[in-house]
Image (tube, rainbow, N blue to C red):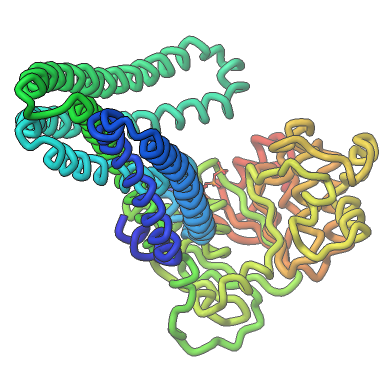
Length: 577
Ligand SMILES: Nc1ncnc2c1ncn2[C@@H]1O[C@H](COP(=O)(O)OP(=O)(O)OP(=O)(O)O)[C@@H](O)[C@H]1O
């Protein structure tokens, strides 16, 4: 919250101050109206002076118009400050989310990052707007109302002063009880949104596994939790209005009765009693607004904390430069993994003592069971994570000493589950890079994607979100074209041809051999046929390299590799190599 007030709202302090004075003036006008009404009824009308009545009427009219106009101006200013400041907060938050390290994103979780960017910024937006409107108006009406009643009739004001503590107790008690309930409701709502997002994204698999009932039960439970907390919170706050009204009406009855006596005894006047009753209502409404403010501020404070936790986290770029750790090695290899060990969470051994070297234009295949650590090799290479032990070098230089953007710009990558955007095929290949339409078409040709692009109506045709109007293999080919389009120095294909038929897969490899012979290539695959012709193949098992060499070498030396080959290509091939 502190960051929002001292940093994000700072550029608007002047606007907020001007807005405050406008709101203040408008509220004062509102506050004066009952007083002028009392004066009109008690003094001006009985005097019978038409001119004076007319002037006071004009004065009241001007006061009302001014009160409304000033309030509208101040509210519009407040809305602008809220929108402008939240725009900056969202931008900074989004920028931060983009540069969070994978480890940080794992910790916070992706759905929570989405909630922070959406519902949490919404709550803060609400608070910034309301605090400038109600936050100014309600206290002025409360304090000003009390002062006016004291000025009008101190004896009657005693009734108000007696009722006020009761109203304050109601507000404080209800707020004290409802704020934690609303906070809890917000947390449950986060889980609820997360569940809906998962269910909608995974609707196909839910249907395929006939898990509709299971998911409905999960949904019902989450829905019930949200409704329960919502009920508790709203039932608690529901006491406020009736209780306040009760005290108000009791107070008003006392004011009317006491006022009648005082009027009869000539100690007070009818107009004064009327004005007094109006102030009574104004004060009550101000108190209710203040109680609502408590809820809004507490919600926003929780949201601001969640936003702050992301904003203050050290971003990826701040730990990209590590002082040169070792003498630059003059080596021929373009890429080197030097005894790399790594764990995502500090408990598992996700990679163990991995060592390999790769020269320019060489190709490396990585094969192994699911979860054996294949993608982890790429994650470390791209510096999504840093290894716990060992050094990764590029041209003999520790990659931790390289600029992160520069490092990543040398790669063309296709990851598992990469995303197709709701854009044209051309823009999906370009991805904002300086790539001409012609270059994109050529890349699509290398990726063997031209046939189906033609059938879809050409490269300018739009794709649906996540490529919903494409088959799995078509999606993969667009992603491969995206990776090839910039002619990267190092190409990484992580299980990116798994959905291609054998013929297309083999044609794709032919294209790569013929047109990307100078490109160093790392190919992660489940199929032996995809990697068997590469310069080196690394066989991973539970994070360790159990074999390294060419297909022929591995057939002789690596039992694990032979088993994979036999299972995929038949015993004969396995035995004869
Ligand atoms: N972000 C993460 N946090 C914690 N553990 C992770 C994370 N990502 C992967 N792992 C774990 O690390 C191990 C290796 O994962 P990795 O993705 O490298 O496997 P893989 O060989 O590429 O598998 P697949 O062929 O199924 O893609 C797995 O046990 C996995 O559960």
